Length: 269
Length: 281
Image (cartoon, rainbow over all chains, first blue to last red; front, side):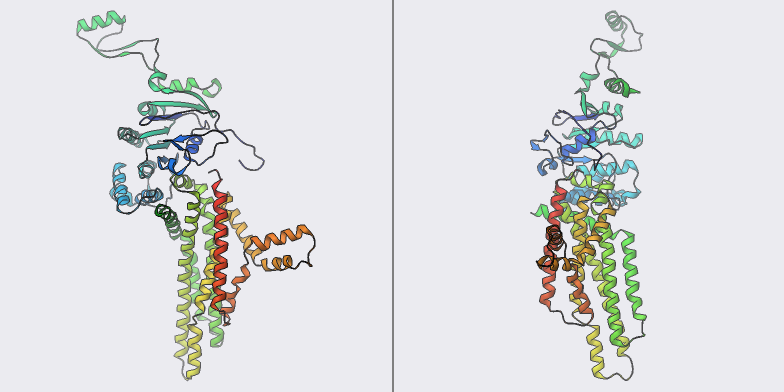
């Protein structure tokens, strides 16, 4: 951290595994180590001890970085470039070139809805949502196996945020693995298969959302057009009356509540 | 290998584009061109003195503008990218750090080379213009006309342009080296300027170090050896003044200085790449 400023342990004893094809959420308050974990996986920071592997390659190596497309928390892009120039630049940094790169640039700009004139405008004229979408196209240009998105919806309006969420789901449908961090817990709940919760550099919880958020000792019946009552009697009564059971099973807690409950008492306020 | 060259050229191209799109560099270039062009209107001296004045002023303008652009540009290369955090989106790709450093350097030096060529063409244009003015004068004998032509279109000026370019390339390499260890642009500019100034005294340190009888204290000798070995000798580029003064400088000497510059640039870039390799971003 510089002379006479001491050192800070940003991450401690973190063990995590992300499976191919899943959407994995990194959760935690500011300073919990989410971005540090991502930077270590990318090789931008070196751990004092421990190691990480990406698709069988040691994290930080060229082979490992070839597997990852990264979108940083804020749009840290050279703003003197246009959207198309940005994607082309990142493509060339990934070793692409020629007609293949031009085709890929065009395809990706269309995918993130920045095709045509929008792609020719300088980045300094873009809105935050447009910048994030341009960055996403840049992250995808090398056709990576893994997408690593650091707060992809931070500062983006709800519509832009929804677009990014839809893009994540589309990428998942294409077989990509997505690792992302977000403060918008409802959005994480919508797209993530599994999450990890970090606090002050340590792992608090990890698991499938289904397992983490389901209250197994409780039951909830969602009935359309009928009042609540005894479950068995009500089901029988409902069937008898011709009512339709929409969902039956353990009720789920909101991720936001679970997340806050996972944090130590003093940091909840 | 092709992938490596493609990545270096991508970084270099982006750095060049950034420099081209920076208004401050364009403004500096315009000022230099105005200065060079304006020198044509000093008509108080004899034609030999006027040509020498034009060359002196022209090459001083090229050196000074190039130095400013080199310092400002190089100071922003890596600390600027770290401050703006744009470096994150570059180094997270399959790009080696040394490729990034070398690409940045080549992007900046390509821009510097372009500026030097534009300014040198302006100097030659002004010299040609002046030549035309003198040759149109009445009562000019053939011998004087030949001298005027020789003064205006002196092929040795190409040597001077190459030497100015080499000097600026060494300054840029120094700035790139400091930019890999610095956290601020001010530090890079201050350190580069300091070494640039020390570089003009390097020959004094070298002579003191080599003459064993002069300095006996070992600490002083280590300091002198450090200055003599680590700091480039910027006095070598004073050959430019010799050329402008009309003295003969053989091509062999020019090529030796260019080779010396190349070695220093190589060493500085290798050191910069090593320093940058272990740095946390």
